[in-house]
Image 1 (cartoon, protein in one colour):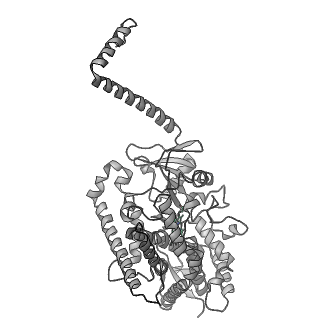
Image 2 (image 1 turned 180 degrees about the horizontal axis):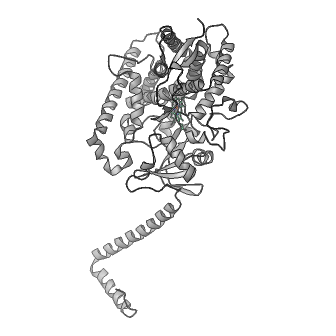
Length: 514
Ligand code: HEM
C-alpha cells in the first residue's frame, strides 16, 4: 500500500525506532536490500549480455537445437550456419555452444582473442579416460600444458626426431607392401583401411614405446583399444548435455562402460611403463632409449611429474596420431580412385623420381611436388580433424557478439575449407589449385588449417606428413589400383571422433613390377 506524504515522516520514525530496538531486523533488511540490488545488477548485466548473443536457430525446450543435428555433425552445423551466419550459438541440450564457420571469425577466435580461447572443453568421458584431462590435448593453456608440449616436441615430434625414425617408417611400410603383394598374388582384394590402421599404429608404437603393441594375448587388439578410446572419448553422455541429469548415465550403463575401458587402458599403460623400468634396470648398452624412457628419466628428477602424467602423455600420441594419420591416407587413396587423371599424374611422378631403384627413399619425397599437392588437396576437402574445438575462459566480445565464459566453441574447418568465397569449385578434388598458391598448413592461414591454428596447432604435423607421404609414395609406386568389381567407391562420410569414410576401403592391387 502506498504511503501518503503526511504519513511518511511518521513511518520513517517508526522504522528507525524498530531498527534501534531490533538489531536482527536491521541486518535482515540490509541483507535483503543488498541481495535485491545484486539481483537487479545481475539482471541488467545478463539482459545486456543476452541482447548481444550471436544468432541462434529457434530451439525447443530441454533439447535446445539437438533435433536439428544429425549423425553428420560437421555437415548439419554447416547447413545451419549458411542460414544463421558464420558465428552462431547452438544449444546442445542445455549447453550453449558457439559455432564458427568463416575464416574471418576463425581469425577472431584463433588470433585476436587467442589466449581467451586457448582452452578446450572437456566431456565426462575425457575426464574419466584421460586422467582428469592432464594430457596435452585437453589440459588448460598454461605452464603445465607448455611443459608437456615442449617435452613431446623435443623428444618425439621434432624434425630431428622424425628423421631419426626413418628406418621404422621404411620397415613398417615394406611390411605393408609385402602383405599387399601376397594378397594380390592370391587374387584377394585388399582391406586398405585395416592395413593403414595397423601401419600407423605400429609406427607410432615403435617410435614412442619402443616396440609394437598389436594383437596380443588374445585380448583386445591394442590398435583397437586406441580406436575405441578415441571413439568413446568424443561421445557426449546425458550429463554433458543436461548436467542435472548426469545420474541417468549410471542407470544406462554408460558410466560402467567408460570405467571398464579406462581400467583396460590403465592396465595397458602400466604394463608399458613397467616393461621400460625393468629394461632400464638392466643397463643394456645396446638398448635404444625411447620416448617412455625419457619420460621416466624426467620423473626421476621431478617428483611433481607423476606416473599419471606419463600415462596421459603416452595417450596423447595415440589420440592425436593414429586415427588422423591413417584416415588422411585413406581419404587420399579414395580420391585418387575417384580421379583417375590425378592418380595417373601422381603415379607417373613417383615412378619417375624413384626410377628403377625399386625402393622409395625418403629423400625422394622432397622431389615429389605433385604428390605433396595431392595430400594438401586431400586435407582441404577431407580434414579428418575438421571440427577444431576450443573454450572461452572468460566472457568476451567477438565482432560485436557476446560470448559468455566457459562456452564450448566448434570451428568448422570442414565448412571453411569448402567455402566458395575462398575456393574455386570447392567440392572438386583439384590438387593443381595449390600449384602457385602459397597457402600452407602452418597455422597462419585462416582459409586452410588441417592441423589447426595458433598456439595449440598440432605438434605432430611433421611426424604425420612423413608417414602420410611416404606411405602414399609406396602405394603408388608398387601397385596399380582398382575398385573391387569396377564398382564406384562409396565416398559417404561418417562423423565419429574424426570425419572419416563411412565404409572401409577395399581395393584390388595390381603389381606394377611383375
Ligand atoms: C594427418 C594427421 C594429423 C592431423 C590432420 C592432425 C590434426 C590436428 C588438429 C586439427 C589439432 C587441433 C589443433 C588446434 O586446436 O588448433 C591437433 C592437435 C594435436 N595433435 Fe594432431 N593431427 C595429426 C597427427 C598427429 C600426430 C601424428 C600426433 C602425435 C603423434 C598428433 C598430436 C597432437 C596433439 C598432442 C595435439 C594437441 C595440441 C594441443 O592442444 O596443444 N597429431 N591435431
